[in-house]
Length: 396
Image 1: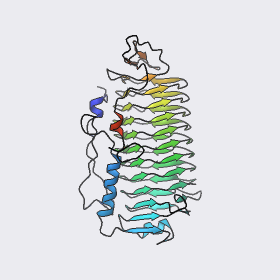
Image 2: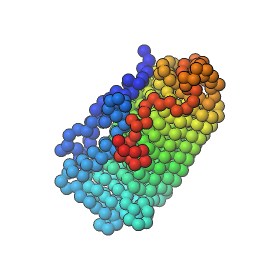
Image 3: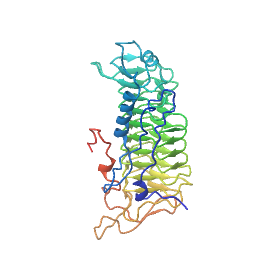
Image 4: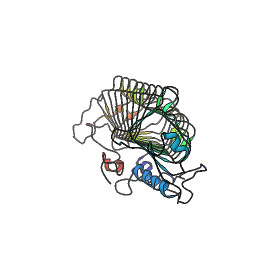
């Protein structure tokens, strides 16, 4: 039997997550396990992917769980970022002031690496045309406030660990990927970053990605995909990103993907497709996205996909197909509402907001039985998608 992610499934709790600080530097050893905030509807608990609360809790643990945690300032205390990391106790905060740092930084312990505008703008990590600007190999690292550029043989940021928080950075003009995750990883948080003009993908998860959150990022003008899950992807949240003018697909799931939620993203002008799901993927929810003016397809599902739910999406003026489905028993409505298609010749005589006739999805036999007469319907309420504490989206 195919697995369809319905509203009840989408609003159910994700499993509790072990914060998984497996490194010998574990900042979590004196603290209780953190649970993921639970997904819920507007009548119950909040659906939020969590992120500010998880990030703030993580920062608190990093600062408080280790008695030798302290503050190091670059270049006041030491001249380079790498020296600061090499000399830091686990869970220390390293503040980096304005300036250009020509380094290839390796973070091998759980520290808070924080760029600070001390008068000359955010600090720049210039990878010097060499390997990655920042390589994260320890669990439990936080990186914020940097401009990371000029990596030719790596990525702006390369991550080989779990439970990291990467936020409020600008990652641009790297020859390959803006941000690359390597290995079977979980619970990474990527939010509020600007990732653009990188030669290949903006963000790529090369191998397995689980229970990670990609939210509130601007991913624009990268040479290949905006956000690419190249390996297996389970229970990830992709929310409220702007994914614009990338050279292939905006958001792509290449291999088996299950129980991911892709909601409230703005996906425009990508050179092949807006959102593409393939590789036998099942049980994913794709809702409340604006997908427009992509060169080939807006929202597409390939052979072997099944039981995915696409609802309350606005599909506008995509060049060849607003929607395309070669899968089996994918659902383009939830039994009450479907999606809005600019290519649908809609008649709504009773003015109930639903077109009088079903809309056939290109590619196979799929059908949206309740196509929307106008954009604007929501499946997950906006207030339940708000990232708590982010001033751009409002406060809870």
